[in-house]
Image 1 (cartoon, one colour):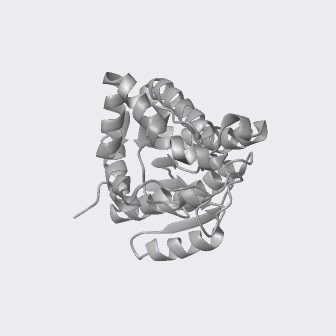
Image 2 (image 1 turned 135 degrees about the horizontal axis):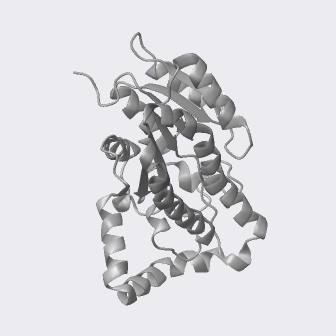
Image 3 (image 1 turned 90 degrees about the vertical axis):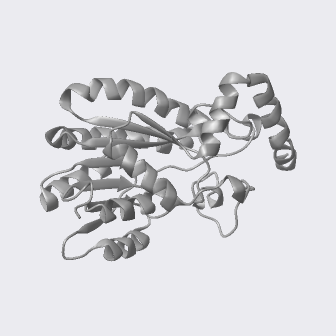
Length: 272
């Protein structure tokens, strides 16, 4: 049976691990050719080899979304190799953590540069090709783009920005047939908590990860995200605990903020 994305071409930033790698596998499972963008070329090439077959091709391209021109060069290569682009997933990102007064302004700039301007560079590079195919854009945001938590204001700010971008952009592009799906992900079991404030992967987690009970696997997330993109949903919140948290914040704000303050108190005290 043909997959939902049979014969299409899906480009994914931040494809070397986590949600990005899982999405590459899911799009390939659904019949798409995949274009993998990230800085860690060794991981990309291994994944591209895994996903390549007689029916499907996978292309690994070194790309840093914080540098002007790199995503454009990748899209030029996609046009040369495949002649089309159908899906663009802006997934590359990381998390800066810490109290505001313990961080520097450069920490905030570094966060916004990757998580916001990296997305803008990806969009500006891919939209012309997507307009030709009436394609799909997927923005990987966060539940923390709907509610903020102490000790993570740089990350929350960056994801709040994506919420504003996604809503307006979906209306801008509607006439051209390009859809925008804003994914608000909860806690996914990825390397996010092993990456420090400089964006460098560490051996051990530089911050305490959330309880396993709250996590879902990247593979579970990827299946839901790919389905949301296929059906051109404007927004998609996952998993269930994220939906419950947003519901509680909206309907019981006093109780919600009390619970968050108490849940994060120990972590914030340890960070001092």
